[in-house]
Amino acid sequence: MPTGKRKEVAGHTISIDLGGTKMLAAVVDGQDQIVGRAKMKTLAREGVDEVIQRLAETAQQAADKARVKWDQVAGVGIGAPGPVDPEAGVVYNPPNLPGWKKVSLGPRLADLLGVPVYVENDVNLGTLGEYRMGAGRGTRDMVGIFVGTGVGGGLILDGKLRTGFRHAAGELGHMVVLADGPVCGCGRRGCLEALASRTAVERDIRLGLQAGRESLIPELSKGRSLRLTSSVIAKAFHKGDPLVADVIRRAQWYLGLLTASVVNLLDPEMVVFGGGVVEALDDAFLDPIRVTARQHYIQKMDAGRVRIVPGKLGDYAAVLGAAALVRDRAAGIPPARD
Image 1 (cartoon, one colour):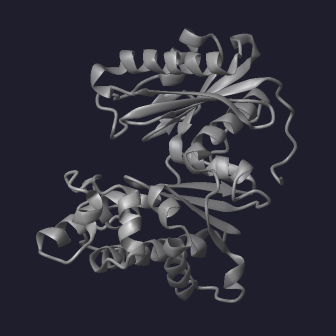
Image 2 (image 1 turned 90 degrees about the horizontal axis):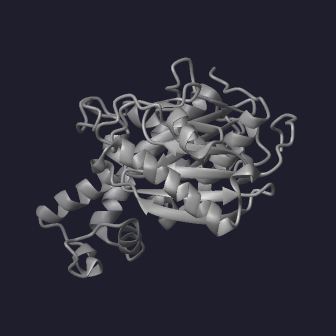
Image 3 (image 1 turned 180 degrees about the vertical axis):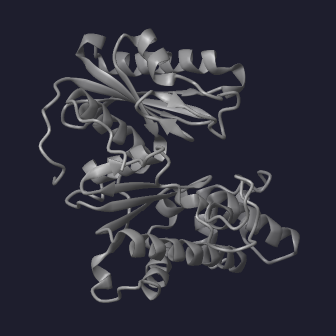
């Protein structure tokens, strides 16, 4: 992999993907294989102290399942939602962790576990995971776009994860793609996230149902309060549901415009898409995005050389990215801000 020479770091790493509803910990060995895992509910409403204690317990459970002792662990990497200062290990105001105004997550968890703890934005780690161990292997310049509850992005430029001067690079979900469009969770109008996230797709499907549009969604939901999971949306789409098809096509259009803007700005070798909807629909979701993007490239010559592909690591992209982060920091490789 063209990522530059690294000093080999012996031992295992422990990765934690911290979400608003659950946390996943995994032990990764020196061959990047997951050898133990554990999961707990986050229970964010119980406060910062309780969540940090649960993170420590989840890491311990994963280590126990892998039969790994802490003196065999090079460090812990955490993918956290929201703005992160990776140099200080601080998490700022994540939208799905109420009460986390400015939390020194890295130092506090390091005190509990007795090993170094490194913190990074979860989407950045998902991008790093796909770059090192997934779809992006063999590239130098890659962009990750993850479509979930929101839309997040990560940047690999010249073989390095770039987080920006203020650690805020890659906020692709908050690029405005429709002036005066729907209100986004950030308070502005017309952000991509308000038009193409799974949350936006679910909102527009529900509005269509309320307006009396014909749809298979009530049947596929089986009366469970119209639960619009990614799998239900995918089944409806593949069965030719007209409402779902219209909503998905609109999201694909805006994601295609975003992809074109990213390619015009950065000219990466590859754009990797991840997230539940992408995984459920695969190329049926990406093909229209590819078409729209290529229509809007400023440099159309050799446009097909910019590969737009699905991720390969699924739910474990951020976990494996966290393992890569720990190995980089343990080898003395600092964050590449810009």
